Length: 111
Length: 110
Image (cartoon, rainbow over all chains, first blue to last red; front, side):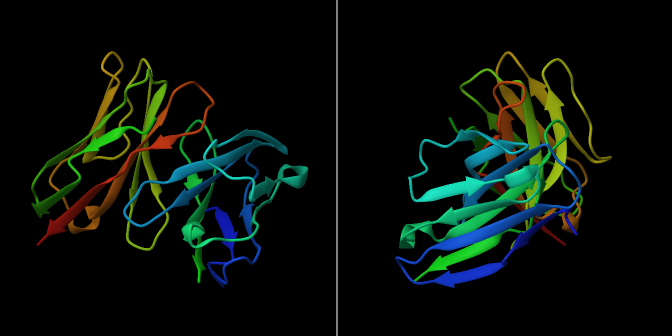
């Protein structure tokens, strides 16, 4: 139990389909972050929230990606019209000043 | 901009020491260190704040040179459980998101 729950753990989808991932911090955290990680690389920043407000979004993120955090609790990350290059581990993290707590991630495979 | 970690990989025998370096081209507010085992999420080890140094574990410590924008992670008397990939994450301004390095793969052999 990492303190951050992500669902699903694995997702296989066909190219062109839409997918949605969910992140639930177990305890209340003001800040929630989404990262993407490909094999052999460090986590790459996607976006983050302060409560329900989305404060920053990576310039590398295409318009096909959108994230929400209604009511400042759980968060969802949606990818529309998936491409093979979207295949990666999507990590959610909570916390700020004293380290991030990462969820176990959602591994997306686009076929 | 992504911090640069070195070395990219290191193999140790149990009981040996290792140093992992993290270097940034930007001024830093803090540096975080994480360890990730295969198939698992990164786990927080410690944070070093501008103006201070924090030791997170008995045999794992770190330093932060603000002037050089560099941090080093020291693993002393390594154990098998230390194996994994170590990432530094840098914070440019207080409250910003972390930017992670490419990782250092550490393998400790018996």
